[in-house]
Image 1: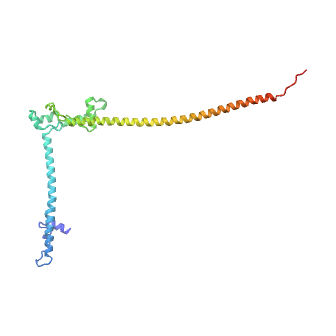
Image 2: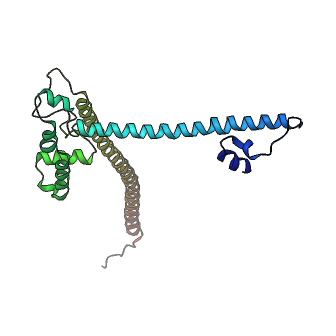
Image 3: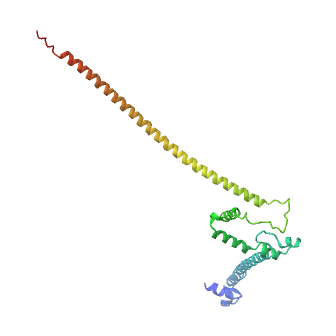
Length: 242
């Protein structure tokens, strides 16, 4: 801590704060190596590295801020067209940004959609609201404005990709719903199969009990018949009176 405290605050390094030695001192050579090493590694290399990092960081921040300022003043935030595109068409870029594609107007529209009851949306409002809730930007007029005619041969690849992604999301949602329905049907079929097995087992029990009762009834009926016949044979005959 002593070396860092004094070495960094002195322009010549730690050697400025140490006692001077005579050339005849046997430790002079080692002190010279220590002072020069400290001065070169700490005061020159390390401090310049730290200062360079700080300067580069501030330069990057300044460049980023300048880029944002240029985009803010020369690029439409909504459609993305540059100022020179409007100047080639003889259109005022400032009026376009202020009246046609004013970001504040779009913010007001989103606030209006949030406050409006969803069952009162028309087709366009419902589309914009769903895109907003899905964090999609397809509803923005990207690279489109009524003052500039787009090139017919120019293809909006980003829009096509977004549409494909939307279709894939819809198909994925449908597939998940179908999967859930199939799982529910599978569970229902298994439940009905278990019920049918239980009913089949119960029917076998009922048939066996019915057969047993029928056999018991037949046996009891035959026993009654035999008893009647036996009683008839054993009944004594009474002679007729003369």
